[in-house]
Amino acid sequence: MDDKEAKKRTGKTAGLYFSTVKDENKPYGLWKHFDKELAADMSIYITGKMYSREKIPHTTRQLITVASLTVLSKPEELNLHIHAALNVGCTTEEIAEVIFQTSIYGGVPAANTALKVLKQVLEEREEGLSTAEESQ
Picture 1 (cartoon, rainbow, N blue to C red):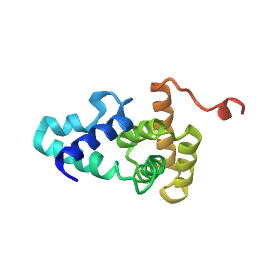
Picture 2 (cartoon, rainbow, N blue to C red):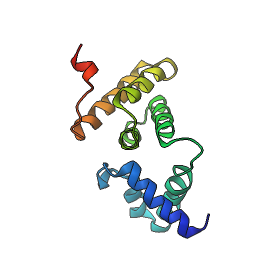
Picture 3 (cartoon, helix red, strand yellow):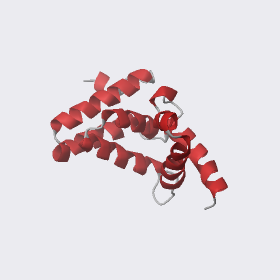
Picture 4 (cartoon, rainbow, N blue to C red):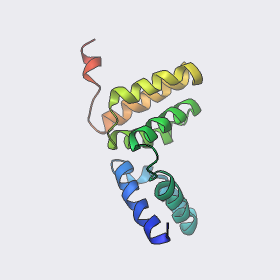
């Protein structure tokens, strides 16, 4: 893939994943503040080359990412990827289930932190919690 195609894919994938994330919460702005050239390179590699790969669906890729960030207990990055998961079509129930599943491997405290992040993202997006919760 040439540079022009990588840049095009970067913009498309970044828009798909992170359109609902406030600019000040996007890592690219932080990177750019310190090194514009490196920020562009990182963005092209991560978003244009890795996230845009078509080996697995975007929904699967984001659920894997949510699981990984939950186990690693990285709530700020998890916030971005819960937005991305919702943006590519994952349901609240799927994301919550992935988080619950990780409690076996990453521990209940990590899962609780991730569930708080999920709740926060849903509130930010004014999507509320699932109807399953409301019926309980």
